[in-house]
Length: 280
Image 1 (cartoon, rainbow, N blue to C red):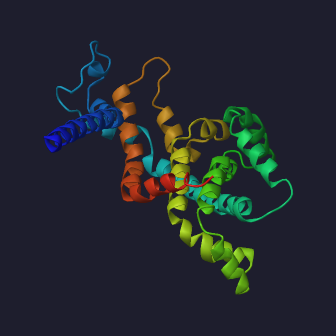
Image 2: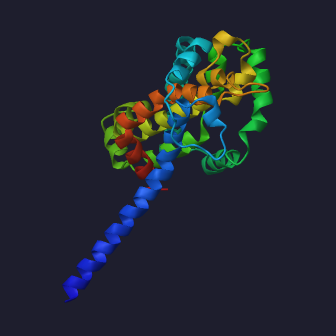
Image 3: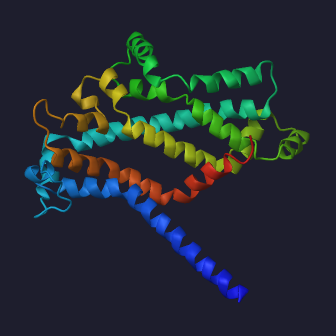
C-alpha cells in the first residue's frame, strides 16, 4: 500500500515538474516565436488591436525588403570582426587577471578584488563619455577597433574565471613547480586546458554582449559602413512610422548565428555556469 502511495506521489510530482518546465519553456521561447511570426505579417496585422498571433498570409518578402534596405554583408562582417577581436583579447586579459587573483599572493589582493567587484555596481552608462573621449584622443572613433577596445576588460569575466580557476587543485601547481615550471607555464599548460568550459562560457557571454550592443556603436561610429548589426537595425526605426514587420525580419536575420552557436556549445555553457559557483 505504501509503495502505491509513493508511486502515486511520484507520478503527480513528475507531472507537476513537467508542467512547470513546459510553462517556463513557453515563456523562454515565446518571444522568439512572436518575433518570427511578426516578421511574416503585413503592416496592418502588426498594429492591429486586438493582437493577431498568426499571419493571415505569410509575407516572406519582408526579408527581401530588409535586405534591400540594409547591407547585411557589411553589417555581418563588422559585427563578426568586432566580436572576434573582443573575444580573443578579452579571454587573454581576463584569464591572466583571474589567474593572478586565484593563484598569486600579493599585497592588497583582496582589497583590489573587492574594489573591482564594487565597480560592477556602477552603471556602465557613466563611463560612456570618458570612453568616447579616449577613443577620440587615440584616433579610434569611427573604427571597428574603437568598438572592441573598451570591451576587452570585463570585471564579471575576471570573477567568473577566478571562481573557475579555484576549483582546480593547487597540488597540480606545486607538482609543476617541482618540475621547474613557472607561473606562465602553469597558466598555459595546466590551468587553461582544465578550464575549457569556463572559457567557452565567457566567450559566449562576450559574444552576446558584443552582438547586441547598441549604445556604444551608435555613439562611437557615425559612418554607415562601420555600423554593426544592432546599429544597422536601429535605422529601420522611423521618425514617424515604424514598419515593425521589417524590424522583426531584420532581428530574425541578426539573431540566427547566436542561436546556432548556443545550440552547438550549450553543454560547455551550462557546465561553465554550474562549475563557476562550486568554490568561492
